[in-house]
Length: 244
Ligand code: 13P
Image 1 (cartoon, helix red, strand yellow):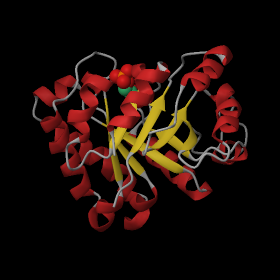
Image 2: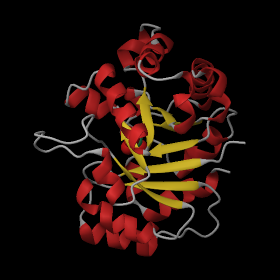
Image 3: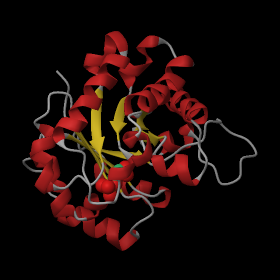
């Protein structure tokens, strides 16, 4: 059985006061899902402290370096994240791909760096609006997955999470319909091979409490990666309660 997972991606939002307030408002009671909060790097220690000894709450990072150490100004390695009890790390978010030029090959190296250090990568995949309109959704998602598959053993997926985030649904208020999302999730599970049934596949893109129930009712949607709505502790808690 796959445990439901809901991850908050705060992106480059908030500050110390926001993070403190978030956790004074966020109520883990009545949440059966695993919850991951991915703040900007400077607030990782703060979130890690809150998550300490809480089985269902973990801290995640939004990015990492593919390198383990060296002259890479501005980069953060997997080992450094582990030092702060980070358990999960997002790799290949569409904003990293589109704004910072991260290729699928680079994302795959980050996936490997995370796993090698014992972190759980949350690999983001998803098509742009143009690619969807051209009928290329599955081809794009398959090639993003293949880049990882090409440099890992087939069972590597088992220690990972995949997030399907259609680029056109991120921060736009447009969500894929539950059926559209389910179709892609089912496809992704098939692409993951023998271990596919064990991998949590999250949906991301304008998830809120109002659409969470319908998305989570789909057989292959195991949770969500939440951007904007994760900045409101009560709204995020409502999304977490909707799954599982
Ligand atoms: P929104 O929930 O704001 O659409 O963002 C989704 C996302 O990019 C999560 O990683």
